[in-house]
Image (cartoon, rainbow, N blue to C red; front, side, top):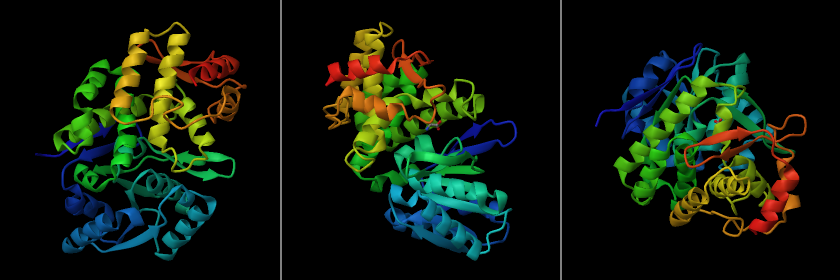
Length: 367
Ligand code: GLY
């Protein structure tokens, strides 16, 4: 099957997302012209050592030299220290502003490398080669880059678009099932935002996708990045109330993640799954959404083995504690936290009038 190309139509820096089986070992064709005869620097973590070896071997066979920088897996690498180390390593390797550095891995690697490339030598180019479903369908596309600080996740960062995104669905074969399910939550999100037919597809094909069906995986990745590319092209910097829709489930989810200490007890995608179910249930409470739609969302997430409630996410905190996390949302303005609510499946919108005391009461009742 030939590769699928999804353009991200940004006026000043358009780029392509290329989706294709075996791209990891065919990457030289696309990375070679960017390397322009200089060695490529690839940043990867220990979870993808095998993929890194395959990529470097393929580049080597094509006569493209490469250096690898390995970072420790996990959120802890997305820190000031991790950023400083990476920048020092890139400078030591002689990376120039006109070079393209390659992020091979999941969201942590992509966010960190993206931010390092945004500031190194006042900005150089980078390529995203995601290796998790979550990175395929969300974090590798759209140019959000960041590190975490003591005060919270992704609080320091930059919009910095990649020059190219290469997605090889074959690498998903080595992804642990739990990571796969967590990434699948972000797939479902696109159906819930504005594509009821895609949600329907998810209900019929989600189980095969998670079981490793490659046609279902490619279809879901294509549909997801196509949706994300359109949203990013319409509102790159999240100022027109369009890109904010991608935060469906994230305000509730962020509170759950914070309560779980941003630990492996609750992965980001799992928190988003529970957060989407809560956003729909809260939309029902506000009289916005038919209860049957919220029930369908909850049932599908449960069927896929994803958290779909506070209890299934392992959260026992009360409503007041949970909204306290929401109040620190980096998207809050004038004390108001924007929520993504829904008038039904595929009909999400940004609500600026949400009263956190009402959300706390809802969460207490939802326990
Ligand atoms: N993950 C949300 C966004 O890229 O805007």
